[in-house]
Length: 150
Image 1: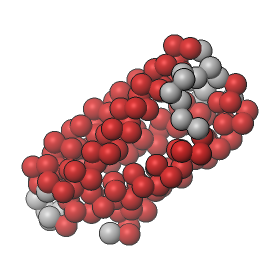
Image 2: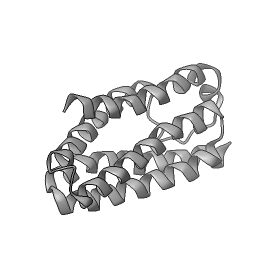
Image 3: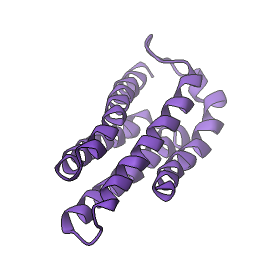
Image 4: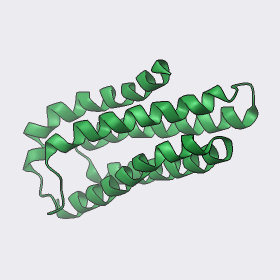
């Protein structure tokens, strides 16, 4: 279980490398919508979401890696995790909100696919991903507005 959480945290660690550097130098200069949360909100939210994602993936893994539907579900999970990490690289590292918007839309679709596939295997694993889906939905709206405003 700890390994699955650590794998999810690795996506956050990759993203934070680019995020921490860009917040004071680039992100702080952007026009943001009125509903943009304060910067301190993001770290605790993502911490909780990565734990829930790791627990969700672990519940699926426990069902038996040898089964085709488990492998496929976890491959989709891995793809969305790569999209998760790459969003920060694109948005904060490359300073490209437009391309990041495309990435986060693909991420959102990947999460939806995981929710559906996980639900067919373990309902609780699926439920654990719902806050992540809600947060990424909000982040997509935020990303879109930052792109439009800048």
